[in-house]
Image 1 (cartoon, rainbow, N blue to C red):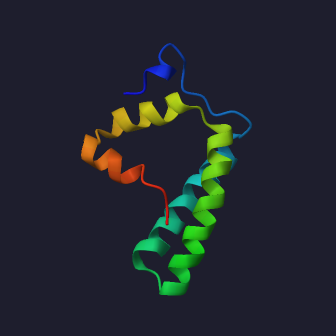
Image 2 (cartoon, rainbow, N blue to C red):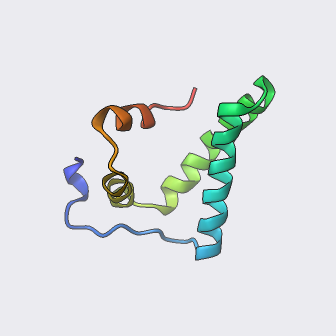
Length: 87
């Protein structure tokens, strides 16, 4: 667990509920393209995810990710896989 976020609350700043929901849908679609798309769709989705991750990290603090990880019950092995950079 990342101790640098202890004592802070999970926050999403600069996005309203609709924008956050649209981002979540787009993220889900991109993951589907990576898993089930053609080679061209996979490349397009990976490129878009790289851009999207920077945008998400500028609006969401680290404690939000920690809370989500804890609530979803991921194992350390699953978290290591999830946290790998998109190639």
